[in-house]
Image 1 (spheres, rainbow, N blue to C red):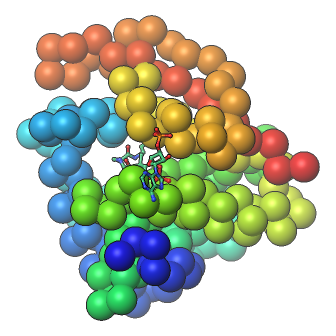
Image 2: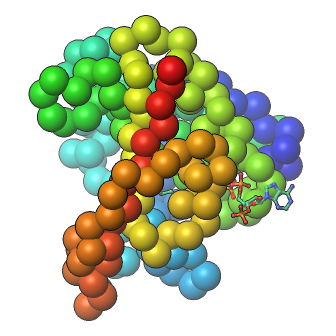
Length: 182
Ligand SMILES: CC(C)(COP(=O)(O)OP(=O)(O)OC[C@H]1O[C@@H](n2cnc3c(N)ncnc32)[C@H](O)[C@@H]1OP(=O)(O)O)[C@@H](O)C(=O)NCCC(=O)NCCS
């Protein structure tokens, strides 16, 4: 049950099974009742070895270093991954006071409050880091479950770009949201 899941920061030992979980999670991208949530074509929704290796070194980078990243996992009673959230450096210079958020909840664990719990944990960590003042995120405008969750957790929409992506023959808008940490 996701309600009983514990949430903790991931270590390097967790990453192999995290990547396996993530690739399973990406099978949901725009499939069936799930909105497209990653700007990737449905058939190409995979996290390949190059991205895995970049993710691994980003998790080992100190906060404030270019390309830093931190990952938290929600683990169910059996130790299975029920959800994840990560914060990472923005790619632009002069943005060290901002972090970018990404997240997901395993398909059987959704709508039990786990998404909100994951955001609370990541936001509390970010607020405790004096160097960080904002969490930003980018979400496909069609992804209403995610946008509603973010709004409920205090994120404010700062902009929207129409026709940002053309994926599988569909024009998709991208929505930008931010949470002030102090
Ligand atoms: C978006 C996503 C992360 C939300 O995670 P979640 O764990 O389902 O989030 P929550 O349970 O906290 O909230 C989702 C809904 O469930 C409802 N809910 C929460 N606890 C509940 C409970 N005990 N019983 C019934 N409903 C509940 C919430 O009120 C919310 O409803 P709303 O959307 O009408 O406001 C999840 O749907 C997901 O992983 N989607 C695919 C990946 C994705 O979109 N990632 C984000 C990319 S930007």
